[in-house]
Length: 163
Length: 434
Image (cartoon, rainbow over all chains, first blue to last red; front, side, top):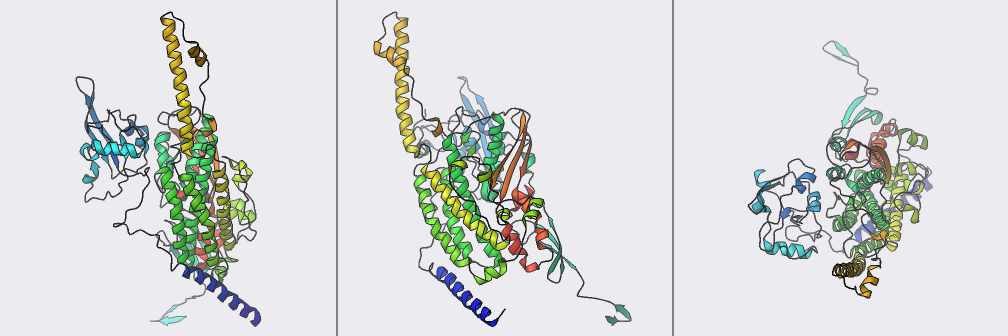
């Protein structure tokens, strides 16, 4: 390459690098877009796929009817385990309802098929724990109290009270 | 030649080849890819990609899960543009079952897919320049990608594993205010793209490292089955959205950006231009979205429901009157003959008959569907034996074919160009191994 060509190349290179740097520098004054997470919680959508929960009736009794539809559509084997029996009035009684949140992939299939809108997802994503056993949530952990369930239903546009 | 303890060792450093394992845990391979490279000095003499380190048997999983159970797994086949995986899977089953898809669903699918293309290209842009050694574009690209991911979170509930499309429709309608959010984001993006171009396009370092490097020609592309931006950078305007319009791509106006150089820089330019074209498509799709805002549809539906209830009650009263053998009200009789108004069928988010996902059984047959993903042709080949599980599911990932051309691009070239060339192909390893 001739010396003149080289000079031009250097000159245009400098100009272009200057233009790039000017763009980078223009970002100095702008507001940061990152959130300092533990102090500032992200604004999550109402459809967020978070921790699974069981909604209850307005008087905090079980809404689940033990149909096992959620267990059937779950892509992970044996993730949701349900044991139930029927009392003398043929009403379903849930003896055991466990979800191994450690193996859950948060796909939301179970929430879609639930016929009574019982198993749903919260926007809770802080699920770390010290042992694997602690990640197996039972009915006590999963059940949402009546008031919280009502609030959940209002936020997601469902009928507020369920009897 | 040297003489140590009477033994003559003949050693020619110039002609000795060295085998270097690049990967599987290499910071620039975007996943786990092993490249067994034979180097002579800095010149690559031979290269062999070894894949399979990320194999998760996604195809086999489809055979022992029902169609609905398999759906969340598809997101993981290619997680940077998961909407395409869902689309191609749903289309295969819809074609098999002969379902027709409402226009509103097609448009929402088109919007989400194009936004997904932008987000995927943005991630490519950031990581590609990171491979070249530039750090700032990575942060800018991720900042803008975050906005698109937020839109996806609003619509599907997840940032990357969407599980949103359903056979014959969608999981749920778009949320209220989503259209405005999309408009805000896509009006903002062209300014950002201009910023990227200002930093990168004419940068002498980028130009030196990209122009004339990793040149492929059309024949090689066709031989190896390379598709997508890599093929379009060779001058072939092959885009399934244009050549075989699926979804509603025949109703929107857009161009297929091409370049004739076939080098790394051409592939970069094609991808940047594609993002602008995607924005054009999203703009048009939002303007022509059948039904518009979900709130309007709900309002109309409520009005129609009220009319339908009136007719139903009139019918009941007439039946009661007939049972009691009295004359029914003339107004009721008149009302009974009315047809309840129905919502425009293009406005539904499920087909005419809602598919029961849990017990969905397609008819016996086989089907192949193809889609133009951000990386090229993404295909799903599906054989059904009439049961709720697929007999065979085969994924045709664009990355696998695109990766296979890497050795022929690299042999005879310098090793330092490897990451520029490999990065420009936009290979994503989960899609290679599945």
